[in-house]
Image 1: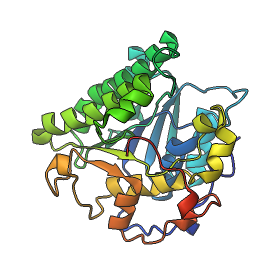
Image 2 (image 1 turned 180 degrees about the vertical axis):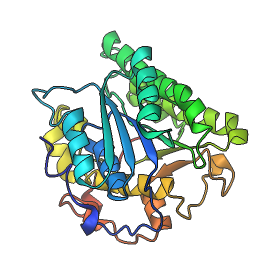
Image 3 (image 1 turned 180 degrees about the horizontal axis):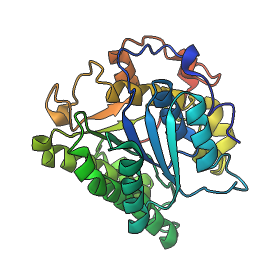
Image 4 (image 1 turned 90 degrees about the vertical axis):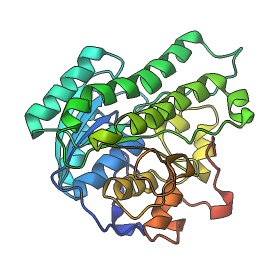
Length: 300
């Protein structure tokens, strides 16, 4: 079952959409819960088609929701869903998801690289299996899903690759605090930077999105001290609304890396996006803590 936080309606949020994702097909890695499910459910409110490639096909002992329960929530919100049990680390699973999306919905308009693994251990403490997991899911998975979807994206009239990864902030403190994780997340962001440049002539927009504050997710709650940390977090709906604004072409200023108002190659933050879409009060996204008590996210 999904949690009440995952299933929270967008009706109470301050974001008021000016565009729609109706009829567009989104292929997402992960999405059984948390930020990915919130983004998928927000798209479903418009009548979007969502293809979820996720590992959780059966109920997990410590994680709420499966790819099947996520698909049910998407359809209950008004969208169409296709649940695919698979691993973004496996070439054949990713290729199969791309083929299924095209066969089931006729094409792909959006690739959303949501799947990610986290381990904030320092270099001498990180297990190399965890290092490999982060590299395989975060970097290779993002590259692979984007790569294999390119033929379908080139046929879309409004193609977009959106990756949940941070700005490329080369302040040494981020590498010094958790080098293995920093390399994995920056690998995702380098994919955004490179594909945005490489795909200019193809008309495929490529951007990244990152939260300004800690977001309540299962990954955070399951970390040591995570239950206390999420008391000073925002709910995943802020990321869902920001992703919706990006994908529907809200009037957003481009980041300096993209050169002013370029539509591609940006590393957006949720607050930046929603402020550009007219949101002035972010308090409704909080889980209860005052704005000054919210924990800032890393890399910013």
